[in-house]
Length: 229
Length: 74
Length: 145
Image (tube, rainbow over all chains, first blue to last red; front, top):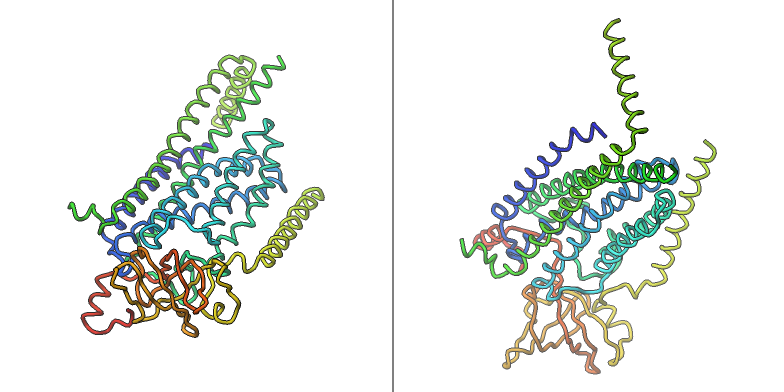
């Protein structure tokens, strides 16, 4: 804990610096797209939040498996502390996607496989957080939530491959495709800077939240001790 | 400058997308830090009110101090 | 050690069976998860006039015709094998262009013309700086629309 505490100011500083660089590159340097014009700039906030929403849930599922198998309390705390960040990122991905869809596709929302599975991810996040809030005993809550995280992780490959498995209004994959990206460099650079910034942001907030969760558990056990006299 | 902010006529889509993203990130930072600060205060108060625990802490601190002395002596 | 192994086997088998179950459900749902149907499906399968569905494909080059009222548009949707003519009255999205993707919702008339009530643009995965395209066009090297 003390080690992560020493890293924290650096992580926060790196987040701020990367965000500033990404915003400058994405909003001022990057050119408009030949088809989508200036709306292409929504990509620099849409793609990082969509990526994080899935990466965070993958982390939570992994931590949940570790918590279930090895009973490691830190894994439990990491999963719990990640959830609100992931839910926020999913909401941001959905909102920025709607703001991009309206001018380009002609609609804020359609029920295609990509958008629907992404909305499902958002509700899984909410259900996960509700489960933690509903059960008082952290050990029991942790077990139930871990199972939900593992069950919910089935949705991750569905989100990723939805644009390949079914006809969707959402475009297909453009960065991770065989034969190289279909996005040209001037768009890719700000996108990757922003993905880096969002990732460091996640770890910064995660450490704050894990810190707080550890303190909250100590408070809980102290109060139980006091109640016993 | 004004034409820049118009975003080729898409200002009402581009800027709200950035504003929403910023609001989510600022919200996460603020809620996380206030909860951390609040719980730290509660824990400090509880530990101050619990002499048994505080004593154990002092004893532990004294023990480490002693062992440090011992190593520096040697 | 054995208890840990037991829990690990429990978690792994649980995940595998969950994955298989989900896969089966998705396989069974199959066609219902498809957002639109292509022209070849429309030509080879039965789409009765009372059935509302979405037609997706590319807007054929040179096929867009605007009527005198300025609101009704006729165009042809193609998958480069089969084609379906479409008529639509309303506002087209900004990205509606010949040679670009489109998804139209409506009904197939008895005359084989698809009457759309909503037209959405489906863009592809290609992103190119606008000034690069302008330069290519100026040099006569542009391969796109």
